[in-house]
Image (cartoon, rainbow, N blue to C red; front, side, top):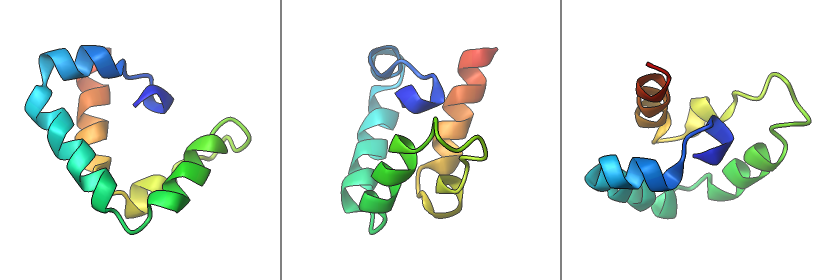
Length: 70
């Protein structure tokens, strides 16, 4: 979440059920290792967006990011 400029504590306070769903999907994700590498490499690669292609939480995280910017 922090890599997407989302405050995890704030999101958890406002959307506790959503955060639980996100965590559940992350723990079960087959691409967990790839995701960790992509997030770690975020600042090295300005085109960092490949996680959206495989992340089961991509739509929810994008929605949360959009809501925060409003």
